[in-house]
Figure 1 (cartoon, helix red, strand yellow):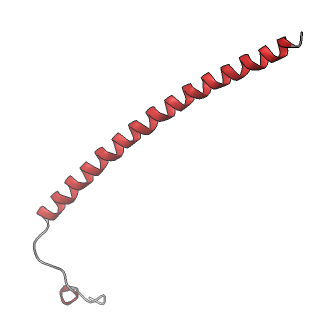
Figure 2 (tube, helix red, strand yellow):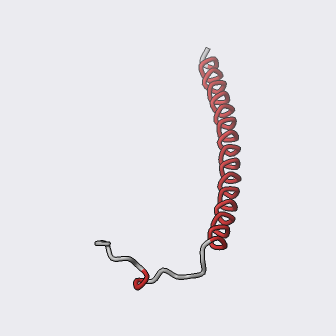
Figure 3 (cartoon, rainbow, N blue to C red):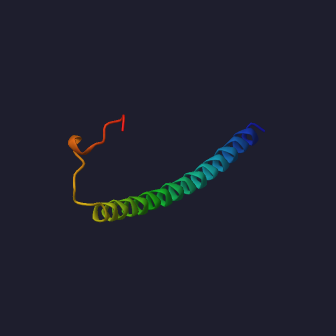
Length: 71
């Protein structure tokens, strides 16, 4: 009878290991998807920055171009 508790514990450990492996695989897929989304958002941000640079006038707004706050 001493082997039954050992077998039960071994079975429990195998189940936990399998569940842990499944969880790890799901987390890896989630991280992969998130990385793809980050890369896509970075590309979109670069494109938006480029659009803004193209659409802004070439003039620079230096300190001499600013209107004083009391106007």
